[in-house]
Amino acid sequence: QVQLVESGGGLVQAGGSLRLSCAASGGTFSSYSMGWFRQAPGKEREFVAGIRWTGGSTYYATSVKGRFTVSRDNAKNSVYLQMNSLKPEDTAVYYCAAGYRGGVQVVAGRYDYWGQGTQVTVSS
Image (cartoon, rainbow, N blue to C red):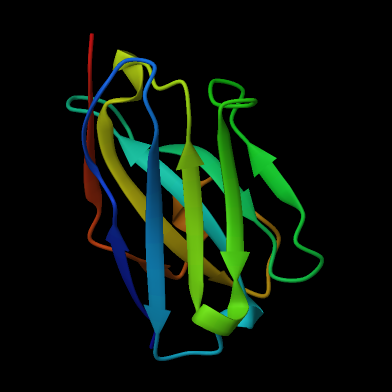
């Protein structure tokens, strides 16, 4: 059983930056591909970025490519999402998710564990 806890959300003006963190416990973190998803009010949860469990390959949604960077530190059992040049449309609850020894998946249902989410609000 893996527990995931996100942090780092908050209120920021458009053009600003935030760094989200996701701390994992209860499993072998290095064996999990990690994904970041977000869900805005009235919308479905959508893939934002992900990083593979082996090799560290990263993947991004088109809407965030060039602005967001996903990274991981296996020694700290953590994954991060650096968000720059934030836009009001980035406003959502952001979730991290873990999938055991799989590739990075863009479908939420393919992940085994989820955090509780952290709110990101970007004002115009």
